[in-house]
Image (cartoon, rainbow, N blue to C red; front, top):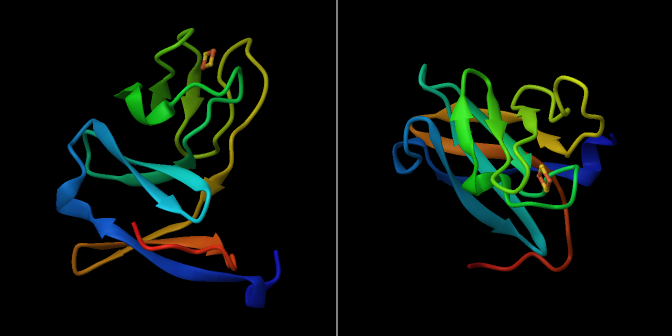
Length: 115
Ligand code: FES
């Protein structure tokens, strides 16, 4: 991962994310689900289940994982990997929170748009 190809993207405010829930943000064409656990930890994954692309942002957050709403795979919020017997992973993003602002470390894209 080249440092010059990525940057910290201001995604949302931490207070906007429901505890044990998520919000979805767009970065260019990429959809990113930002989750908050019961302990107020924040994680970010591409909003695309590694099984068949289900919207992880609509899943149920428990402990440090999310259960996909389509076929109930559990995905680790820390690694993006499917848990248990299931295989596969979705992209995860580094997160920083400062003064309630959630920043994601994402790849620069020329198609970046404001939504
Ligand atoms: S699409 Fe997520 S479990 Fe099938």
